[in-house]
Length: 208
Image (cartoon, rainbow, N blue to C red):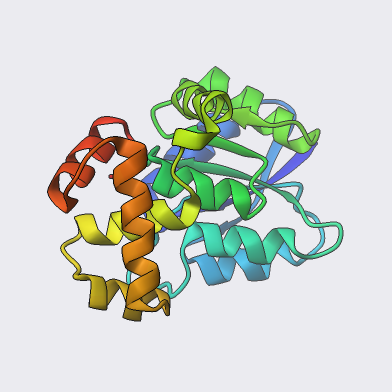
């Protein structure tokens, strides 16, 4: 049996995932978590093979899914983490995968695809949503044009309306470093302004 922990702040989503997964003969739901912190606690206990992790939790959680994934996977003998979320921009996928997620699926994936991804994760194999896999392949083909995780993070904050000074404070970077990141972003995206960079990045699915 593959023992599962479902981590999502929406009760309806947890119930839906439970209904789908419990229909599989080799799956058993051993726990649920409504916050990222609770997911980290439960994943540290014996008896969990795969954590199905959302990326964004409500105000009751100080951590996000990527941070929880990093905390879980940092422990020896940790369960695998399969991200199941509605977000598929590079700003979401890259931090999650860098944090140690074994797989990344979208919540609109068919039930059979979800079941296959869980089995793959339990076996230590990666399972990626097609849109995520396509973009990762594109990053490998054209590494010079791909935004780094930090550049994506900076641009995401710019898209949220933050000034360079606010971005520097949020990320604990100097304003000169923020400007440098933006210059690299402009070059890679072939644009010459903040507005154009945000528009082009959204068109490419790099940020939300």
